Image (tube, rainbow, N blue to C red; front, side):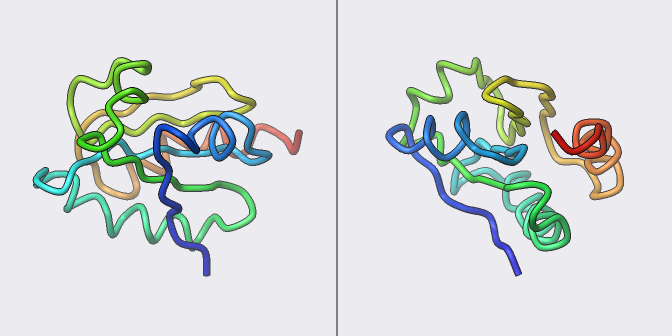
Length: 112
C-alpha cells in the first residue's frame, strides 16, 4: 500500500513538478492541529489511489522556500499538481468525502 512521500525544497521539482502522476502536496507543520487531523485522511487516500495519485508532505517549518513560492499562508494547504502545474488548491481540514470530491475531476479526466 502506498503511503505519502516526504518532499523538501531540494526534491520538490523532481518529486512533484516532474512526476508522472498527479501529486497532492500537503503543506503542513508538526505544531498544526488541523494538519494532524487531515494526516490520516491523506494516508487513506494515498493507499486507495495508488497508481493514480501521489500524496506528498512538505514541512513548511523546514522548507519555507517552497511554501513561499506557492503562496502558502495557512496550513494545512493542499495543492494538487498535474503536469507540473497547480490545478487545485484546498486550505484547511475537510472530511475525506469533500476532499475526494474536489480531487475527482482532476483524477478522472482521462488517462493522459
